Image (cartoon, rainbow, N blue to C red):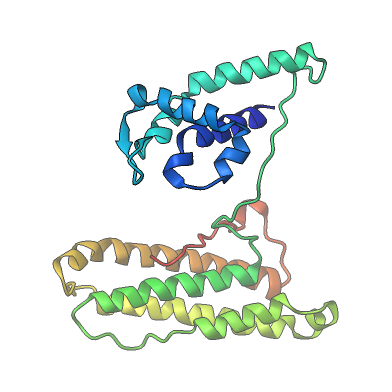
Amino acid sequence: MLSVLTQSVMNASFGIYFPRFTGTIYEILSARLSHMEIVRGASTTESRYGTSQNSQGGVSPKHDAFSRAFNRLTPKTMKALNDLVVQIAIALALEDGKKLRVDTSVVETDIHYPTDNTLLWDVVRVVTRLTERLIETVEVPVTGFHNRTRSARSRMLEIQRMTTRQRGEQQTKKYREIIDTTAEVVESARSVLDQTREALGKTLPADLALHELRKEIGAFCALGDRVIDQTRRRVLRGEQVLTEEKFIPFLNRTPT
């Protein structure tokens, strides 16, 4: 009911404040107001919200009139409206007021379901991105680091798409491949850290950010070691890793 009330207020506000400003008919229809009511509503806002001359020479509210009016709906006001709606619902025997039902939407997050193969892929992807950024930042030439994201992603997808029969025949082999790729990337990243230990950035801002970037790469390499060890124990050796020893939340960062 509160959602209906809020939507009604917004539609009515659009109908009163914007018809002559936007030149569209949507607000008039949604607000269910006559032309006289719209004109009267717009004219009563002149002294309160300020006016401006439109292209036809008439008087219209300023462009921020609706925004300023909507900002008057403070948390205190919304709470009072909500309490009033609940009281009405109880009086009409529609709700008992003891439970809260909310409507939610599914939104994208930066955390995915942590399977062993996707965690290994995360290690390769994040460490590679950070290491390549470091290589571009420093003045000295760096050798020995290769981008293996395509190979790691292919192995990860192959494992994800396996049937039950294929898992029994091919899973161990594919996991060995992605583990080897991940270990190679982690060791290569550490080699880059050693090569750039005394290096300076190409620019002053880059030089200032160099320490934190190196620190971040080192931290993710350490997390990569944990993921590699966990996968070897669980998949290759068939061990049951204790819950307190499992590494689950690997950060799924997006490029910046």
